[in-house]
Length: 305
Image (cartoon, rainbow, N blue to C red; front, side, top):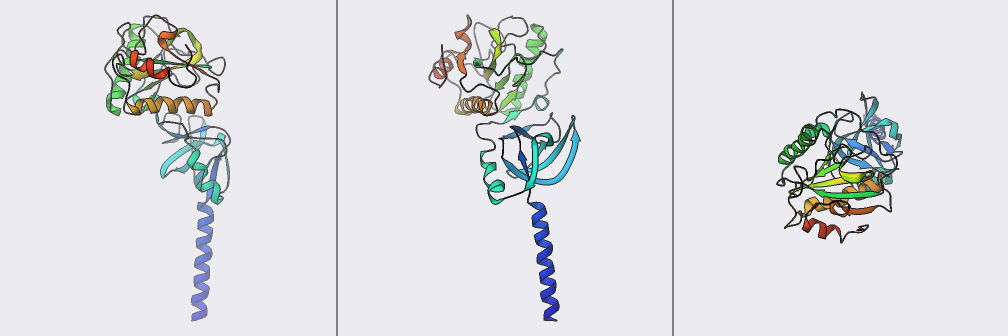
């Protein structure tokens, strides 16, 4: 009887070991790749894995938006990654435990266009011709927002204004940042923006949602499409923070999100390492991004008048 019990115990341990081995299969990034909340590019971005970072693979695949998506455990959240950017291997103690700690280094929460209810662009604006070497900071021409629900409404209003009043194909900015600490996807990392005079294909425009007495809703004048900083839209990305920053600076949540977004872009190869940071007023006749925000970004690394 004792012999039978020992054999049964050994068999149970053997089965458990098999299950543990199966559960410890890892999905490791072969390039910088987003982890999304569902299978498909329309889902919310939970974070970004850097090359070589590994997460636990749940051994479930799903086809969506032209990719096979791997289901993973992402810091306790249910995540999905396009398998084209993954390699699968047995998890080691180091890869399963430690690399995930660095997987989102510098990357803030990015609310996808689908999640905030973006309208489809009226036409394709083209890809940036090269990795952007400039980041242009804007603020808006509206009150700020401090909750996700309010910020979603604000971003929608910007897109509607840019498309319906200016006749642009889409919202002008690459990304919009709220004082809720979230980043809202505009035209994204790779598409030519409409944010900065003469520089929209050499940089990225980020907008801090707020008031600008020299411009309309969204902190922009009546420029043609491709002008977040007109004629700067091919050398830069436009980042716009929601709020009026003539008399006060954005809160820490917004500021940290902007800094994280810039760092994330550099780490992902979406912004050059030697990028130049500018405020909208540095390249145009405008009060944007507001006196207090402008004074703040002038103290940041890479700022150049």
